[in-house]
Length: 414
Image 1 (cartoon, rainbow, N blue to C red):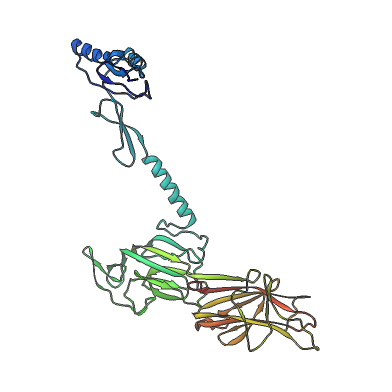
Image 2 (image 1 turned 135 degrees about the vertical axis):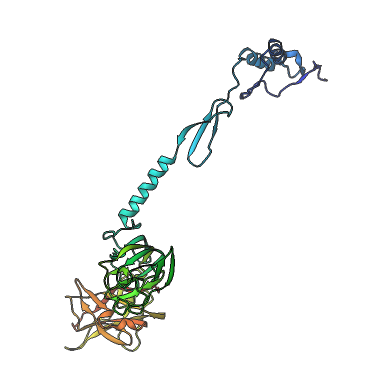
């Protein structure tokens, strides 16, 4: 049976009502205009103004618009608007954007957070204030610390860390001027040139009594232990074998007491060393049995171990094994955690194989052997092979190595 179509006018919506939205409409403030506007809306509230059929009556749709017309209110056309004119401010307008007022400023919050982070960095020693900082916890291997240094012409500035073998310091952006009343008088730039008429001019003549007699007078330098090195916009790595030393910056002048002015520069201090632990309870660490002597065997998940000694008085049994490097390495210290089955120490010899010879392994506490390469000055020549020998002369006993620690300059070779 065909549907009967009723009416002519607005299309009939598929649903009688839905979630509401609001429109702000500007209407002329005159009674006839207002009456026409409301009358036009009232057409939507009449069921006979929709195109409908016998299956889809328009009564419910008309009722929805009747409710809307009955709740229609007149008001001003002002709209609340928000904007963010910059990174910190949030503004509001109640007059359509003619005027704006700040309702939130994030600057104080941001400054407070930044100040807190800066304070933490200064307290931790990561950031410098320019003055002389106190001692701080040294950085771990491969970690760097940064400072902005202000160095008085008559003073010295100490790196507040236990710098040593393999550590590197880098100076950049050196600027400022220092005054020396002797022999001039004159002002100087950090590179050891004359500071005159607002510019850095010609080089100052080296003076034989200065800490570095071949460098320009008043140049920025650093004392590394008992030696002095150039420090103007350069990097310097403390050589293996130096040990732990103080690094102190100053101007290249034998008499600092009557100087004036100051230099400023950025300083990065890096612990370019490594500490590698071979834990033999995990794996064999890549170490192998030396073929020329010894009977070492690896006990998986436990340790490297010798065979038990079965022999006559005075005889020994040894564990001897080593590891090799792809390229020569400057190793500064070796720690061997050794042991023996039975009373300890039950050992006739403990040593390390380094640079082609054996060296005694000093006894530490609780079955720890210590060998510092600087003791024999061996670390001056990089090695490609290092080994361990532990022997026992107690009948029926064996000796073992549970772990080895290697300390060196540069990156970890393992």
